[in-house]
Every structure is written in structure tokens, then in C-alpha cells.
Length: 159
Image 1 (cartoon, rainbow, N blue to C red):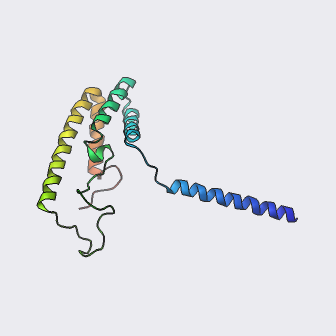
Image 2 (tube, rainbow, N blue to C red; image 1 turned 90 degrees about the vertical axis):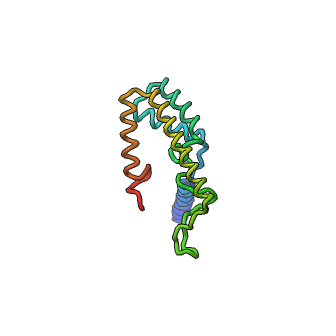
């Protein structure tokens, strides 16, 4: 009887230890490198729009070329001001209000926005050459829907 109880306790202890280890692994954020993110995005687009292998290879080249130029669209830090702290706006001295931007910050943001817009325009022109007209129309429709819904992660945009 004593051996049975010890065996049960041992099994329960091992099960608890494995569960904790599994939770730790799930709780940790997996770090992607840029290459892996670009490849994953390319694979998702290829699968969703039924791209051929040749189209997929060209799309991978295109996504790699524009990965650093397009910010949020390619997995960068979307909407971050130059020099902004992670974590957004806190309670702090100004009661959670957005801090006023300096003229220099406004100019930097405007220049970065124009640069991203130009890169997105060039990306779309090159993408249109890779995809068939049907694939590209489906892609553009999905992009418009995603913008209307407030991005990849969810609901309507907050103002």
C-alpha cells in the first residue's frame, strides 16, 4: 500500500513539473528573425491566393527587398514615434494624454510616412506584375477590408 501511494505521488509530481514546463514554453514570446517573418508572410500570401512556385519565389524576393522599408506591413513597429517608450502612454504627469510632439518630431514622422507610402506604392506595382489580375484583385480587396477593420489584429480603430 505504501509503495502504491509513493508511486502515485511520484507520478503526480512529474505531471505537475511537465505542466509547468509546458506553460513556461507557451508563455514565452517566440523571437522571430526578419528572414523568418518575411518567409512566413510570403508563405501565407502564396497559400491564400494560390500562387505558383515561381510566383512565390518572386514574392519572397519582393518581400525581402521591402521588409525594412514598409514598417507595419512587413512586421515592423507600426505607429511608433521616433524615440517613443515601449508600453504606450501611462498615467504619468499628463494623466495619460499624448505628449505634444516637437516640430522636429512632426517633420520626422511626416517624412517617414511619405517614405512608407512611396514604398507601399512601389511594392504594389511590383506585386501586380507577380500576381495574376484575379489574385491581385483578391489581395487588394483583402487589404481594403483589413484597413477598414483596423489592421491585422482586430476590431475597429479607436480615435
